Length: 171
Ligand SMILES: [Zn+2]
Image (cartoon, rainbow, N blue to C red; front, side, top):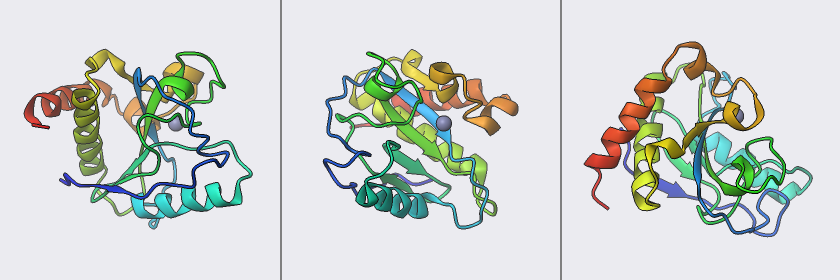
């Protein structure tokens, strides 16, 4: 269980991080879908930093979480291109804080889920959001993401953990 969020922001003004204001209506949960043993939070942090420097792609998210670490790539009050719903007002891109949960082989997925629930609970508390603000990528674009959570029916358990942490955390 990690309680530390490592902030390592990507380049501002890039396609990945345009700096547009985020009204913070949703927490959008994803999984990376990358089972390579090295595909943990730190590697995703390096990956998205490079994406922003290359400045070719409209793709980004706020946090990467694995079984040991939480990295933040974009401040909560800016948008990210995570949800596949374009510039829809109030949608997952324009109004979501996005979390990628790593599924790299060799890491403890249950522990990664636990860290993601901690982070989600913390964000709910910090931004005064109800548990109903926690959404799946699926809810915005129909993509089967977060895939393991969906296919293993772990969503309700995940939400319960988010609520637990929201109550337990002191800001
Ligand atoms: Zn996703």
